[in-house]
Length: 399
Image (cartoon, rainbow, N blue to C red):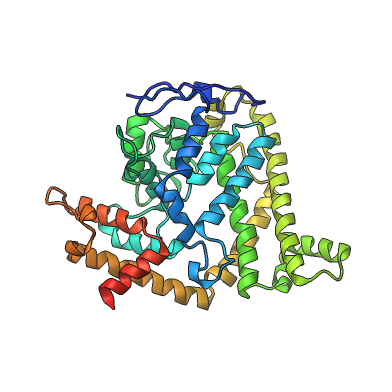
């Protein structure tokens, strides 16, 4: 049974912000904390989880062992968290909920970034596929085993809703899958948790979840540019041909004509983050004036996102993403490395399926599991690996 959350409010929150004192609760009832709100407890549980710690050795774009200064999945997550809190503070939302969502949004990412995800999705094609957003929900609802009374972290309804709807609504009002799930259907993890808690899969999530999602976009753009420059796959001259980076570079060079390249790079990232955050704040205030929400549910029922980029910034964001896709993500050197990483994950999955005795005892599928459940358990094990552990397993089994 879903229990009512008990906490305490405070702070200068807007009427449409989530109120931890009025949370829809948790799947398993727990006594209230005398020192923390419900959303602060969610944030703390994510930070102390095993899955969160593993992010420090999981690839963002460049493999962990390719350089000490490239982003990992953990440093990306922390940067998303900082941006999400800045947006939440400016829009008078609940900062702790926005932070909890940012910290948990990639907790289900497999090793080797999207290469690992592609390999697992292909391996699981006959068993429901693999989606890293759905895996994040599996981690926080099932795979973390820390508490005596329940599996998972027993997060609040609001945090789970934001994780499930990180990319927006999953269905229309009639329950038909839409968007990215229109063809292949909604991952079973999402439908199961929504069946238990009714997460309103047809609606947009609360404003805090929308702030965390746009913070993810901002962090991707700015920090992948920084890493791409550091790796030599991007140049300041190539970025100067893009509308927004080019405008910022002209500003920087006009103010500091003799600035060293590494300082120009940092100043570009700093200004890019600032302009994007300021754009989201201004555009979101205009949307909120138009929606005139009197509660967080008015945000959900608005039929469109309340937090987002202006049309001009969305166009600039799309241009940056196209350039990163061509110049960085699809660069031959990156593709070669990621192709090898994808092969490792695929071969590990095949070996574990063919010979379950090669798995640790705790992860061997029992006879009571059907093929789909056994495959999902192997995918859970693989998704939890760090880059380093996956490489070590590959050497153990194939060298």
